[in-house]
Length: 217
Image (cartoon, rainbow, N blue to C red; front, side, top):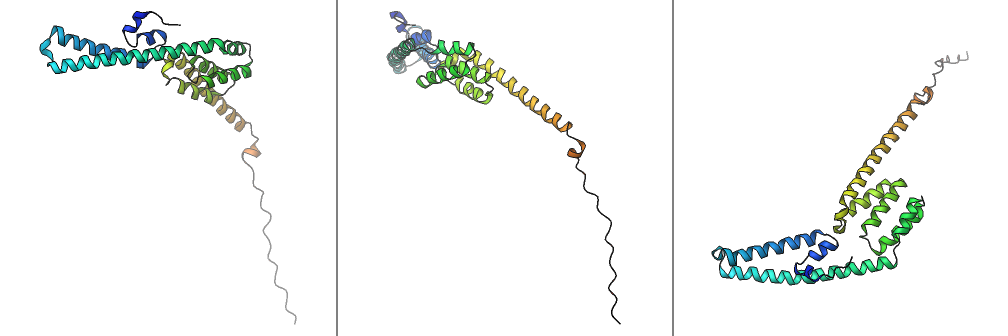
């Protein structure tokens, strides 16, 4: 997705929000809008609300934040477009997805690992890799990956999928623990009585004390 419409840049943070929503872009837009509203109200509607120095300070902060927001938005969009072009040139995600669907999990894991080395915050690749590990029974590794992934800012649109996958992993871990306990209890019940309660060897007859030899006369 390429953002070229000029009026989107009038509101700092709007272009990043439309391209890929992030918490920082959302908070920046809300904060700048709040400063603008207060400064406008104190200048037009209620001039007596704030002293002139405070009003001027608000406008300075607003215009400074507006210029900084424009620069940050421009850098963000440029970086995203560069990453998108790189993915288009060497996009291994469809190959990894196809390998995963046909059951070739080793190839899918290799492709996804290489993709995550280039872009550690690739949410789609990390989600698919967690699914691969879940199918392989590597539940701890899959849960660790998803726990780190949900802290990534770019993962905000996929939080529902991440939480759902974590719930599946939790159920699998509980089922695996129950199965291991069941197998252990069955093994203990099937032990023979001699193995479960080994018998001690019965002691022999008590030794009889020999009389002392008669002294020679």
